[in-house]
Amino acid sequence: MCKVPFTKVALTYEAQLQLLRDRGLSIDDEPKALFLLEKISYYRLSGYWFPLLANKKDHFFKPGATFETAFKLYCFDKELRKLFISELEKIEVAIRAKMIYVLSHEYGPFWFQDPALFRDPVSHARTLSKIEDEFSRSDEEFIVAFKEKYSNPLPPSWMILEITSFGTISMLYKYLEPGRSKRIIAHYFGLSDRVFETWLHSIVYLRNVCAHHTRLWNRAMSIRPQFPITPLKTWINNTSIPNNKTYFMLSMIRYLLLTVNPGNTFTSKITDLLEKYPNIDILAMGFPADWRDEELWH
Picture 1 (cartoon, one colour):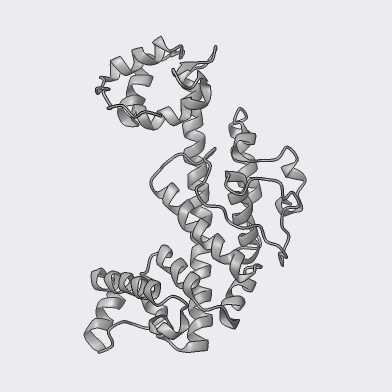
Picture 2: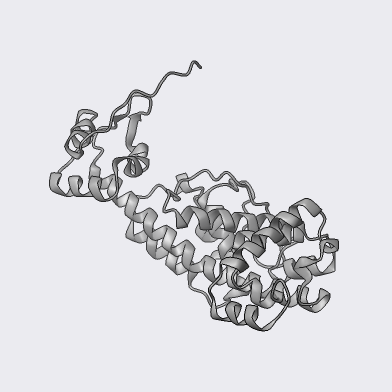
């Protein structure tokens, strides 16, 4: 395919609205549509009217496509991201706590500094550098107090890893040498260490998607967390589902919550959200038609 220069120019809100009309999108409430174009932006909203297009090359809409339908899809996606963030917080805190506890008891409070515990010296050095940067920037009271009192270059893991990003936590686990401690951490969450490693990476990815408010609902993720081969807890029976779509990620969260928050109401939260937006195409999210029959969701 021959590349060409980008020649489009910025359009006013009114011109954007007229362009949508010219392409066949029905707009019943013009003031509301103009308000949303101003507050959200044409380009961000375009991801939500994309499924309404009949011709995705020329951007003409299907008969009956409306601006309101696209906006409702945007609202659904926004609530879905909030649901993800709420549950991911619980999971991240629990993973952080378990890693600190297991590895500190096995190797001492400064295990994260020991290159002998990691399989890739270069990656470990890079990860440690990130931890040092986070330590130098932190204004947390307990970090400031540590700097004033102790001569160590870094605090023990139960302090420093409280201010470390979850992406860095994920890298620490990834590059740990395979062994007993790594397995103990993964098994606590009902997984093998290899599968758990891919799930950690997926959590970081999902967190970034949600934090940047980007489209999630029908996203084809660029990561593919592994299916548990011998799950220690209830998992989905349908192994033909795509592992880079939203349904798999929801299943992953539900599975981890069986350990982190056994009495959780995650299933009802998902059900309520789907009932609030009954026109959502859940097949585009990777849901199988019989997903409610899976024991995981009971």
